Image (cartoon, rainbow, N blue to C red; front, side, top):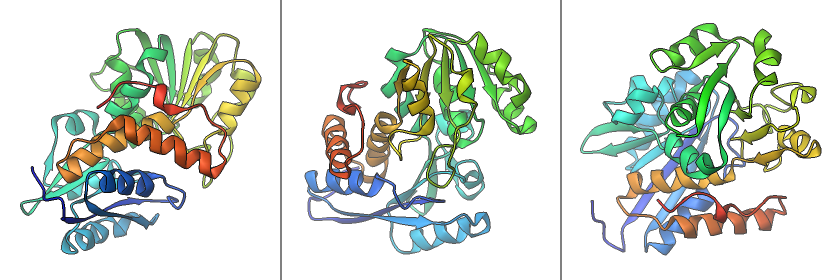
Length: 290
C-alpha cells in the first residue's frame, strides 16, 4: 500500500506498565526517515474491560493501527475481524491494523524472536511462560532447526496445555522446573518477570547451571535480574532488545505499508539505549534484515 511522503499517520501501543517502552522512539524515528509525519502514542492500562473501548477510540481517531502487548495479546483476538495465518496458529496478536473498516490481527513476535536469536539457540530448551508472548516464542522455537526439544512451564495448567495442543511441545508445572532445567541446554524467559512492574526473577538463581544459555525477552530494563545472575555465573546470555527491534520493524511495515530499514532501526535502538546509559551489547549484530 503506497503512501505519499507528506502523509500524517498515528499509531500506538496498548498494554500495562508501558511507560518505558522504546516503541515510540523506534517507530517515530523510522517514520521520519521514511518521510512520514508519524506519531506513536501509548495507552497504558491494566483494565481488560477497557481494551475494546481503546481500540474503538483509536480507530475513530484515524489511527493506522496499534501494537498490543502484555497482558492483552490473547484477549484482543475477540475484538478483531480477521487474523493472519500466523496469528491464528500462534493464538496471539501483537499488531492490529485498521484498514477498509476492518481490524486485522497480526503477530510479529515470532518473526522478531527468530530473527534475533535463531543462530544462538540449540538443544533442549525450557521456556518459562505460556501467555501471549510465550505462545509466539514457542511457535518460533518449534520452527528452529537446531532445537531438539521444548518444555513450556507455566503455573496455569489450562494455558500451558492449550499452547502445546498439537504442537509437539511438552508442558510442565512449576514443581517440575528444577528437574526439567537440570537437563536443559537453554532457558527462555517469556514471562513479564524482570520488568519494572514485575520485579524479581522467574526462577531461583541456583538453577542456572554451567553450560546453560539464557534468553530473556524482557527488554526494559536491558539487564534483568535473570540476565545479571546468568552472567555472574559465566553463562551465555541474550536480552530482549534485538527481538524488540525486529518485531517493531515487521509491525512498522504492517502499519505503514512501507518497508523499514531494519538495520537502521537496530542502530537507532542502540543509540537510544546508549543515551539512557543502559548496559548492553550492541543489538545491530543480531539476526538479518527484514
